[in-house]
Image (cartoon, rainbow, N blue to C red; front, side):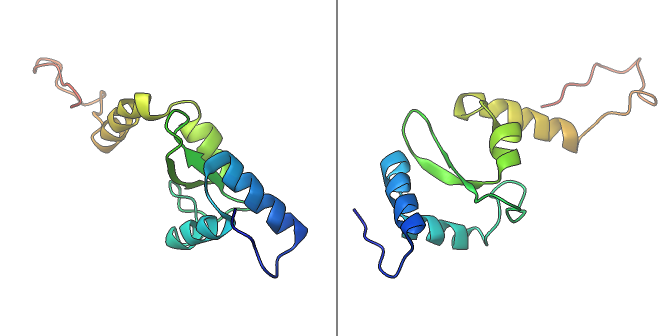
Length: 113
């Protein structure tokens, strides 16, 4: 286990929790946080009151990044890797919307691809 020198009991407990749960040390968490610029990997906002959550693949344990509470629970939620296609389709849908008020209905049916 990685030992933290000059650290508080809370830091040592967090280090033990991170290692036990994610195989990630407190030092690695802070390196990842710095790599992300101190912000959520999805919305790019800094955390408000809570630390960023460690987002990981529940099947493989692979750590993907750090997310704010909202992105971790509400945006990603339970829709993980097996549902990634839904997010790709949603992004495509939002990037190329059709205005159905002005759409020429005599033309062929549009498909978002």
